[in-house]
Image (tube, rainbow, N blue to C red; front, side):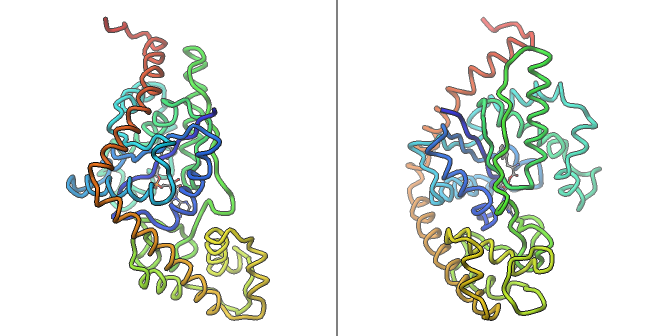
Length: 332
Ligand code: TYM
């Protein structure tokens, strides 16, 4: 079976609705057709200021949330990045074939270091996309389901795979990004010109999957909408209402046209109230399942160990091949 791989950083107390709609739903859907590898990139999370106690807890919460979202740890390998040391080992090799200029063009680094300035950003934040390339290539992944914001990193990964193959002989599968256009970018509820984001959005602009249902509903009801009154899908003229239509459509598996038809002649408020209920139900359900899973840490540890074991079974032979191609003497 072809392979799919993706990861989501444990850098907040909860994942948000953008992660769920833009990424996790695709992860879940692809589990049937693909051999799936889904992981929690804790090593990426240490490239910005963080608290170790918090990181450990967030990693468990992330695992529980991914299972609650529908990742099936018996079918798919669900694991923690630091449990599979081959990621970091391959990243070092890839560092050697990545140009400084090439790495400097990664826009996420520019965005994430904008607050402090590049001078005080960590070198880890700078080389982050190279670790991400290693995450993907170590599994010979065919497809990488991500949101639009990760496209450039997958593009870099493809370039590095091709470069390595060209210089050292066919080694890596060149992966394809799997980006579902309609949901690839969910926008901030308070500022629909920017993406919903754990680091950039205001607290009321983001629905966290662990939000209190009432609070989540309120965020939807108070989403910024556009001037005018008619409900139609027009991301240019009506980014606010279009974002809500996208969310509505994704969560109900109904087409945007169908929803627009239903609300013809009605006010924004009608749509918001209905969507608020849908989102409240989602987070209520999601929160319950996540808390239940978090109640049994031993079981989470067992599932993550199972995932890491499956992951290493694929990662170790890839690294061995890479070391051999790279000219390292085999350890005897
Ligand atoms: P991260 O942790 O920021 O986000 C996890 C996933 O959620 C998607 N996403 C969104 N999709 C739509 N609308 C939004 N507003 C939105 N916000 C986030 C992201 O595109 C992503 O798919 N570098 C990655 C993590 C990573 C990774 C990997 C991903 C590390 N190694 C290897 C794939 C393969 C990141 O920071 O995603």
